[in-house]
Amino acid sequence: MPKQEIVSPELAVPNGHFAQATVAEARGRLLFISGMTARNKDGGVTGVGDITAQTHQVCQNLRAAVEAAGGTLDDIARVDVYVRNMEDFDAVHAVRRQYFTGVAPASTMVEVSKFVNKDYLIEINAIAAIQS
Image: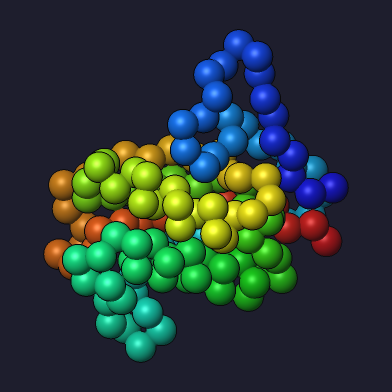
C-alpha cells in the first residue's frame, strides 16, 4: 500500500505543499535519508544564492537516495526542511510540488542561522517507507 494522506476536519488546510499527516504500511523497509543540501555529485554547491536552484538540487539528491534504495519520491512519507530564510517558503514549496506529485509528505520547516557551508540555503532530511 503506498502512503496515504490523513486529513482531519479539526485542522486547518496546509498553507504549503505538505500533508497534515501521512500513513504508510508497516511492511517493507524504512529508509532514513540524511540531510541533503545543494551539494552536487561533483562536490560543488549548485545555485549559490538561488533558493530555487538549490531546492531543485536537494530534491534531485533526495530522489537519488531513495531510488538507490529501490524506492521513489512517492515513498517519502516525512521531510524536515531547514532554510536560511523563512521568506523562501513559497519558492521552496513551488519546487517541491514539481517533485512530490502524489500525496505530499508530512513536513516541518524551520529557519536556521547557519549550515556547515556558508553557501547552503536549504537542507532536507527524509523518511521513506519502501514496500518490499
